[in-house]
Image (cartoon, one colour):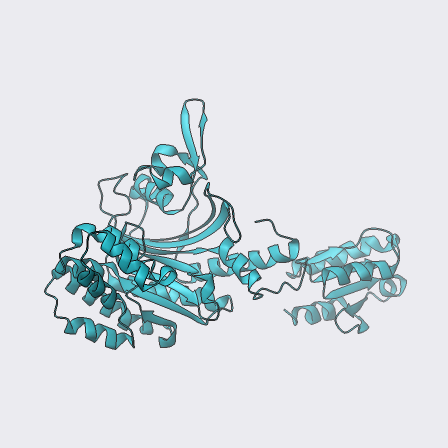
Length: 425
């Protein structure tokens, strides 16, 4: 995705907002190389992953660009295990690359914004994750969301009770398609797996339980399924559901949804998907879940964890398409210092330095142009203030402050200028 400056400024603001939210919850930053050994990225197996990576040889070394941030995290934790403090709370916001066909809204190069907590099985961490999601989207001005929560143990235990556990992965992948393909298509796919139509109907009926969270939990309890895995999943989901509210997430912003299966094989407990209520067609804007062992292919130490990812590039694109992003400035400058002749540039530079020391983004117009041309430049870039420096201003040790939105201008001291500009942002 290649952006014009006005759009890039908004993208950067979103990036910084998400990062600030992650840090507010105590997540610490890491960054891993874009290029990894191919054997690292393919340790879990080839198949679809091998088709998605950009892979190349450098001498005798087989290398690839990372296609997500989870596998690099696993390698990182295994490699630096002795230097990390667990539970390890990490965030990582980097580009990843996938060698797939570029199409509208999907890019080969894009930013992922991930958090994970490694080394703890405490379900309260699972309950904290929705608070991070809600806080991040609220800070972005997108708090009208629904965080959909489920637990993979429930589904696995239920299938165990129906004696179809051997086909669990295929069933979960089919369930994951309910929203896109509808009930009948999913039933058809389940039957094609040699599951009886009765059992396929029971699976679908189970995943379609709706209502308030406490009612869904009560309905599952009423099924009286004597399966340890199912009961463990029910206990975890109840704990998470009850604790999310204590973390400050409004009840309207999260719900239990048994259709959320998450197709990735390594999710083993709580799973999440997040939708924008006004734009459900965008799909999930933040997803993830709990897994039993992050780094099993790189170390013999068991490292359970839970995490989520925001695909920022895709989210930004979709928000632009929906008209929810309205860039209003093409530069970070808050002030343009203009002049009535290049002989006053020395004073302009002194003023610019003073403003920058006060944290005010400032640029100087250096070329010898009429004042109208300089003001036109500020207008095009939507710079809110222009300081004009000429003979009168230099003699009175002041500046002419022009507010571009209203056209109002007045002769003020530098201290008054700083106060006026700062009061607007």
